Every structure is written in structure tokens, then in C-alpha cells.
Image 1 (cartoon, rainbow, N blue to C red):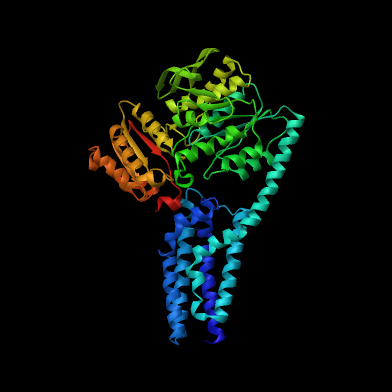
Image 2 (cartoon, rainbow, N blue to C red):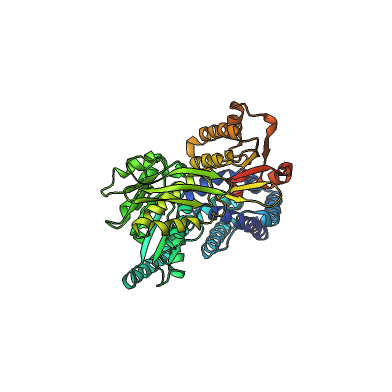
Length: 530
């Protein structure tokens, strides 16, 4: 094959790789740069548009070279490059409508550079030695990015270790200079809400800094410690998330908490953690990593929490709503309305007080009780606790009640979802008497082998509460629809949309004054599209 044609083949392959860079880095970023999750969720992209076209082009390139028809090879790879360019333009057009955008962080830029380097080396080597295989790097671009993630992992780990050492040094310095106390919060669900609730309550007495939004990873916590934690802060609250075994242990080693809250153990991230036993053990790594003698507050109504607490070599403080004797704090006489919730907060053997909150739902009261129990152990009076509870603001996208003034009420629970949280959201929706009840949902993710059964059961629960159901995306629609049908829900009251945007355009125009609509979960773009 003439050298000119070799160069043309190489450049066309490189053009295809370039057009696929941003979309694939986005997918890697959404998977937290975990190679296993990236491959598990996106392997199909190697055989679908546009990557499937690249495989066909690679095959045509090989046939053209071996048959002595180089023009066929060039045309095939050119077609692949053109498809990549069209896909890139579609990607650009879709950016304004994406719920979560690609952020070109330093890590994302390093990953893109590594992908380009690996691709360039592969294309150059094959173009000069085996032209028939020149199209393979473009065809395997999904795998090339996975290889780039693997190759850059040691560098990323070294960079992260530097940030961790900086955060640990800063925490040690502030502890030596001030009376700073660090609180760790984890759980399968409720941890973000509990974090903001605890911050609100403790702020009546202390200067508090909590990790913002859902900053619950090592780098997120390091960023807050290194850039925001100051000498005047008296309490630092760190939310801790886990998708894999050892994640909580790593975070506990990072911040060395003085006290902790464990909100629940449930099937969230079952896909990556494998079993409820693994989830329980992982979450309770926080208790094992909390300073000896420091209070560890645990959801005593959760059977997995109670069982795992028995494996600890330390005492814990249980909280709940059941009022059972083992609870150190609980709530009774709950009254839930559209305006919020009132209840009596009871500290066993330590008094009680009537409280009012703007938050909706019993599960939010449960989170309040846990935070109040820790606040009590941290020196707050009953009155200070009640004052802090009264000023808690609803957390955005977590059962947030919105009245846009159209006569339609919106319950925004779109941040994420799990079986327990979804059930709690339906319970809140059921409390809106005299209104036509809608739910818009794509279902849940990371439930592993239990996903189909969980979504079928949830479909049956939706049928018992809702008047209209809008199912979003293809991921869980079949299982939820099977549950709705099993419960005898009217078929003409079920609507299916490919995306949330389509649901809003096609179906939500049917809302009328007096309706209430629950938005339960909102999947990332790449999962919503199936």
C-alpha cells in the first residue's frame, strides 16, 4: 500500500477517535472513573451506533487491504470518520438538554490525553506495519478509553494521595489548635438529608461546616477540608458514600471521625457491593473507624443495622420511630400534612419536647431523630434542638414540595432513589387527599439481580396510590409495567416516555389544577437512554 494511503487511513482513524473523546470521557466521569462500571454499563456501545459502524469499517479496511483494493479501505474508514463526526455534532446539539454536563476537570483532561496517546501509538504502529488492521483502534475506541483509565490509574492514585495528605495535615493542625470535632455520616439512604439536618440543629450552638451537596468521596471531602475548613469552625460534618467494599474505611481513615451516624443498611449499590451483608459491613466500617468513646448513633429500626451493631467491639446509641426499649431516642404522635410534620421527640430517660419541621414524611422524621440524638450527646439542650429542627429547610430534589402557583403541586424527589426511599415517597404522595396523584419515574439503579423483582413490586405499590403513572426510559419500564398490570392498574392511565424531556412535553401537559405530581428519581442521561 502506498505511503500516502497509509497516512490517509491513519488520519481518518484519528478523526474518528477525536470525535468520540468527549462522549466517552463523559461516560467514564459518570462512572467515577471506575473501569469495571464503565465496561459493565457501556460494553454495548462497541456494537451500536456509531461504534458499530467503526467495527464494520475496520472489517472493510482489512478486506480491502488483503484483496489489493486500498481504495475500499480508505472509503470504509472515511465512512466511519463521517459517522463519528455526525455523532459528535449530535452530542454538541444535545449538551444544553443534558441533566449533568461533562466537566473538563484536570483528571478528565489527563484521561483524554492518555486516550489520544494510546490511540495515536496504535494507529501509527498498525499503519506502518499491518495496514489491514489500521481501523481496529477506532473500532475499539470504547476499550481504548478503558485501557487509558487503567494506565493512568497509578498517576491518579499518586495525585489523590497528595490531596489526602494535605487534608489529614490540615485536620490534625486544626484539632491541635481548636476544639474541632469531626462527624462522619453514612448509610444506604438518608445520609445527605441527615447531614443537612444535623448541620441545622448543631448550628444553634456551634460554628458548623458540612460537605456540600453530595460531596461524599475522598476527593470531594479533601476539597472541602483543604479549601473551606477554617480555624473558627467547631464541627465538621463529612458525608461518606460507598460503592465498593473498603470505601468507608478509606474515608474514616482520612478524617478520623470523633462521632458518627449510620442512617440505614439497604440494597442501594447492591450491584457493586454484592450482598446486604457486604453493605452492612461496609457501612459499619464508619463505627469501627470512629474514635473510641465517641458516640455512634445507629438506626435501631433497621434490622440489618441492629444485627451488624452486635459485631462491634463498642456500644452504639439506637434511634427510631418504633419506640422500642432499645432506642435511646424516638418520635411519637406524628402528624403529617402538606405544610410539614409535627411530632414529639423523646430522649429515653432524658426528657421530651414537641417539634415542628417543614420536611415531609416519616422517613425525614427518622433522620431528624438520629441527628437530634447525636446533637444531644454533643451538648445541645432540648430547646436548642427543637429550634434547630424548626429551621431545617427542605433539601433540593429530596421530597421537596414546590408550589409553582398553577394549582399543581410538585413533590421533587428526583435526586436519587432506593426501595425504602421510593416507598416513603409514595407514602407522602398518598397523604395528599382529594388530589389526583401522578408519579413520573425511571425506577432505580444498581439493584443487581434483584432489580426486576424490586421494580415489579414497586409497580404494584404505585398502583395502590397513583391515578396516573409516567414511566421514563427503557431500563426498568418493563418490570414496573408488569407490576402495574398485576395490580390491575388501568392501562390507559400508564404512559411511557423515552426521556424526562419527552415525558414533560407529551404527558405532563395533561396536569390540571388540583393535581399533585411526584418526580421519583432522575437517571443520568446515559442510563435513561438505555
